[in-house]
Image 1 (cartoon, each protein chain N blue to C red):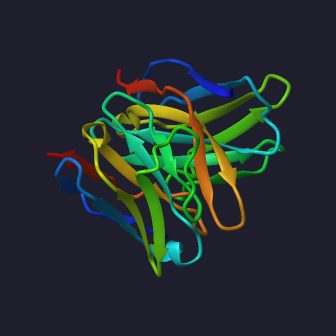
Image 2: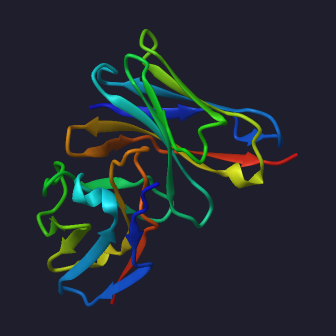
Length: 106
Length: 120
C-alpha cells in the first residue's frame, strides 16, 4: 500500500517562506492535495491539483510537484498560518493522508 | 453553498457497530464521491472510505473488513457503518465531499466532525 511521508514539524519566522513536503510513490502519478487544520477545527483544503487554490485561500499558498515529492509553499508566512498541514493523494487502494506537519510561526 | 452535517451516537460500546449519517444540504449529491475520514485524539487524518452517488464504493484496506458505506440519494445522505469497534476507533469522524479527476482527488467541503467514543 502507498504511504505519504511528511516531516512531523517545521518552523518559520514571521514573514519568511516555508516549504512543507510530502513524499510517496503515488505522487509520481497523482497530484497531492493539501489541508490546513487548526486546533478544534475541521481541515480546510488549501491546494489541489497541479497548483490550484480554492476560493478564499490567500495567494501566499502554492503547490508544486517533482518526481515522488509534492510541496506546499507559504510565501510570507503569517501568524494565522500556524497549524497542522496534511497532504493527501489517490493511490491504487484509496486516498491515504500523510502523517501531518505541525507548522510553527516564530 | 454546500454544507455537510454528521449525525449519530457519540458513545458506542466495544464490539458493537458505529453508525453515522452525513446529510448534504445546499447542493446536489450527484456526480461526486462522498468520503468518511476520522482523526483519533492527538493523531492525524485517516481516510476510511468513499461512495460515488450511484453507489460504487472504495475502502481503506486496513478497515475494509469492518466498513460499509451506503448512500440514499432521495434523502441526500450517505452513511457509515463500522462493525466490531474497539477503543482504537475512538475518534472525530468527518464526512467530506471528494472532487475527483483522472489525476487527482481533493476533499473540498467538510462537515464539522462528530466525536465518537468507544467505551462500556
